[in-house]
Length: 99
Image (cartoon, one colour):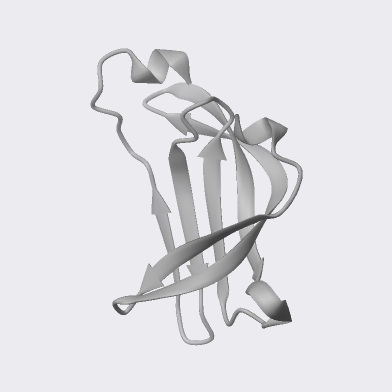
């Protein structure tokens, strides 16, 4: 689960129709309230791109501390704007009870 990841993770993200390799580093933990239930999650931040390239702006993805790693919040910061996307509702029957 997300709680057990301790090393940086290399993956790709997509922006403006292009693929960009990035490195996410695990961060702090936080409890979110979704549909009245407490959901524990861990932050993963883009810290770099492979080869030591600096990643412009900031991206943080909060994943649940279970095997599904459901994204409950995504934060994006740029020099000119910031955006936060929060999970409001889970449609699948029984999924929230397992988080």
